[in-house]
Amino acid sequence: MRRLIEELRGIKLAIFDLDGVIYRGNALLDGVTDVIQNLKDLSIKVVYNSNNSTATRQTYVKRLKSFGIDCSVDDFYTSASIASAEITKIKPNAKIFIVGEIGLEQELKAAGHEVIIDESRCLE
Image (cartoon, rainbow, N blue to C red; front, side):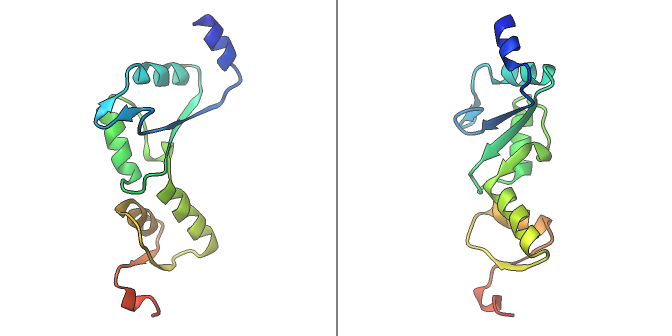
């Protein structure tokens, strides 16, 4: 363990994918909680990444907390949250027609965008 701690010195951030790395289906993978806590004990920030836009970041928080992992919405980077942030930089408070999952819709709405579901309203 001492050797591992030495190798981790200088590391400031650890990024974990979710499905297949933290959990598989509804089951937390063995040892994950200990690894995450050990990293945090070494003052290494832990964040999570997912390319799955079917769930919101809030959904991921609830899921990890149900496994006993302390986390917040700001610890998650999803395809939906990153897309929303980039769109907001380019055109804040835009009217957007999306073809995507609920996670994308909710991220865009949370950023102040108007999400159009009815394609006939796209050109308003």
